[in-house]
Length: 368
Image (cartoon, rainbow, N blue to C red; front, side, top):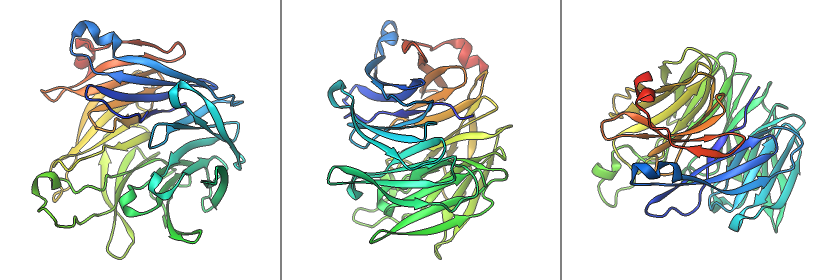
């Protein structure tokens, strides 16, 4: 059974503040939080606060909640087979659309970059991916992909630099890549047997060449290579790369988890030499994977924490300095890397009550 998910809210960042996750704490309710960096140790408990509570009126469990690029719209999906879109500006909650088209629980939603218009993708147990588009204020089904033989568990849009490309991971073990070619047409490429038993998560690498912030000659066009990560029921994280002929090839296999990988998240980048991926698993562990040399493509895992229950989701802040983790322990925790390279929990949000507490303890660090 899939659990509610968290995702980072996207309001404008201030100098000393960061957006915090959206979390579906109750069956039909979504809470929006803000995170404010505090210098003093006594102020740690003030770092997180609720800015909005959205009563979605879903008739069953919410599985995903995603803010759009501007942080003004919230999309939710549920086991009631519906996708809903809310205007959440200024603490409000106005239902914009109630989208019906799936025939089973809807696991995940994903917003495309606004340069392509208002576009939302959803995936479901019904084996379908639906792409919704807003035209003249009305949301309608733009495309339906029914190329999988089992539940589609994850959808993720590629960086806007690559065009309108959607990766879809399914329980049939395959990953589909849908590319918009114009005039309502989508080209489909499929990676069969990407993961034994099934694929649970997909996440694109940023469209930034590692190290380009330091080494890229000014005025030279970067050589983008499309890559994404996937996690599956074979306990593996796999990295995929598009070849020159347009075919997708498995580039790397990352092994550390001892049970199903539930989520992967490739961290945003501004072009620093190190690439970073977070992964979480049914085994209760969260790993941070880093690659310091793109030519060798060697990835090193570091255990962030061993939780006492399944960990469902990991999500980076847009500045990639804070990782949010959601798990079966009924909490959302925020983690940050210290100057000595250790990951510490800086705050946790208790599901249900929406209460917040600071959690930087030596005991947690010692458990690593």
